[in-house]
Length: 116
Image (cartoon, rainbow, N blue to C red; front, side, top):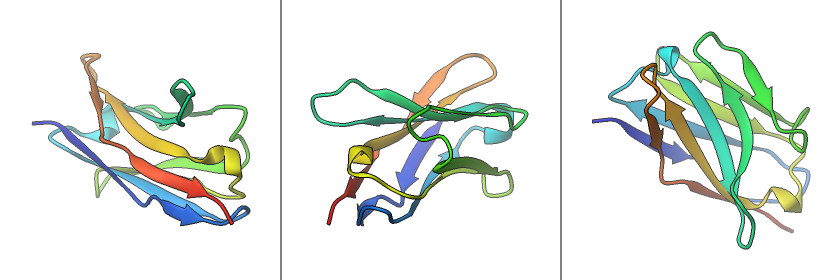
């Protein structure tokens, strides 16, 4: 059974930092493509960052230079390091995995709130 579990969300002040983690089981992140998405109330789901099976990364323009996606192969996890957080970063953050057979799996999400 494939399972993705996000953690690390919470309340942070503008300008602060958070590290989100996506722990995968039943499938190896090293041979998969991992996506971070976010969804705020009243807005469509937005792609945030991608890391593929060879470690190449992609970032949405709104987070470029502030967020970093990375893998820990030994722990089978993917992280999203978020810095210089803004109020508009407030959302539920979800990780998704695309397997080598092109099957998609989703985690349940973790809430990030940026507010003073």
